[in-house]
Image 1 (cartoon, rainbow, N blue to C red):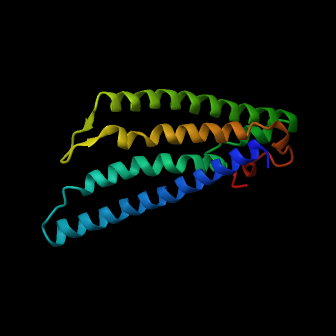
Image 2: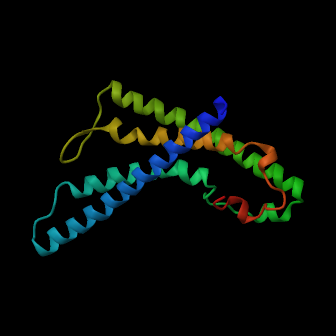
Image 3: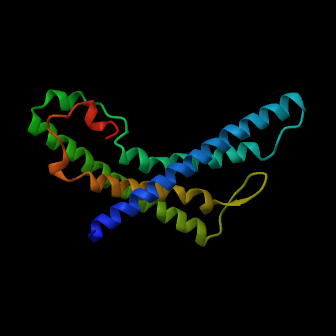
Length: 174
């Protein structure tokens, strides 16, 4: 196994771990809402932590799941243009779509990592009922963008883009 294959193997494992953690975060969202509704309307005892748990878990869930969706080509795509183009043109258009995805996700990684580092250096807290260091929540943002950047870069192998399967199926789980 060469170094590239080892890297992709570990990147895939990290992506699956992020997927599993995103599922846990989704469960926390669901559980916090159930507890809050039950406590508020049946026990007349609203919970101070539920709203914060939901918003923090939503951020984590979104950016932990993002690399998995990119890896499985599950992102939203308007594939009509790929159907209208000739096969070689569609292959080039899909490759350019992946390139732009890598570039924009890479740029978003840089910006979000810079902001997360600033939050850490300046010791910035989220001001809610219980203050939480903001970088602990926002660290999921550069993680999601960085891992998605790597997945888009892995999709850039022009030979792997199948010209006979260019419509919406190219963007489905493969």
